[in-house]
Length: 291
Length: 160
Image 1: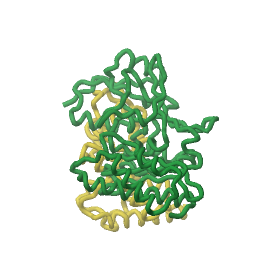
Image 2: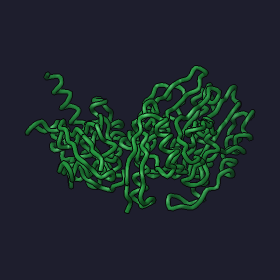
Image 3: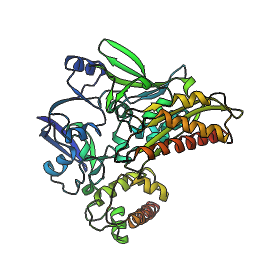
Image 4: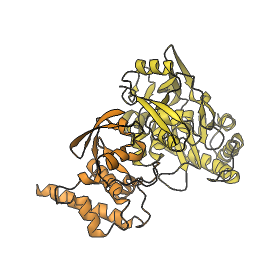
């Protein structure tokens, strides 16, 4: 049995950072949809919660002057996929956000919470990996920007320092401008299910050639991953059937798929191969190309 | 203990509560409104769905303290005196209810959906109630019920 001894609800970020710095044992709660389940499962004993819900502007989504898109860490999944900036410039994040949970969970759960919880199945992660997102991590005496690709440490583990809070997710213009993509979540049910495997492809194609291709996978290794071998192979190549099939093979090799009750290693590897190809073909189609 | 004030179905309730108390416990045990059901207790089934500040949430995953100041609608808040809400009428008419345990949540998800998009297509209806599990009906009659509710609400608006 767990026990929540107190809930702190600061109204400014500075206040929150001060509280967290004074007591790094506080457990941060954003939307609550992961933390309360962890509490129910007895993951913590006595715990004092630091809730971020009252801090203004932490759920803002904005287009900055240099074209960078800033997503406040407290933006819920619903708030994210209903946002015009996201729909216009980061449509693959819209696809990912819509695929998560059901309506109620999407109203509660936040993008920042999804990342910091460190789940290999996090629906926002592969897409943000492919968009080369940066995370703004703020503590009382420091601000650092960390690529999301370097943020995961293992299943359920991320590289947050004591006293650090994720405040924004940033995607620079060169990482979404003239890019198309596709997110595919593979799960047994269409709603209220966790991915058996997920793939996020972002690419820039021109005259039948891959200028840039990024493939990220969820639930195929202890953390979400990028398939750099597949991406490097693709760059500069024309998108023939053979090229795309070879990319699928490379993607499969990048992964460290495992057996779990949700799916076997062999099945996951098959999915990586097939779904990467499918997502690439859809991304090319969306760019107006044929393959 | 933490003091919280919640507006539930239009009425203000102030209570001193344990920080561990969940919104569903506040509604069922403090206010004694038993229409909100607990199914899985971990946000999977939607039986405990309530509308909080216009949006559906799983009340088993919200701490009552985090709902301080919020406006909540539960199933008891839908009827107008003795007159059932059109969604409730439609569910009864079509026989969308079997054991009934999922129905309060199902109806509140429907309400949130139709408040936002009264003309929801069948696909949008299925999406709208996708966070509510029903193990009896196979959903067909529930979807039919939502469609009848749409017509009832549209007709009543035209009659205004």
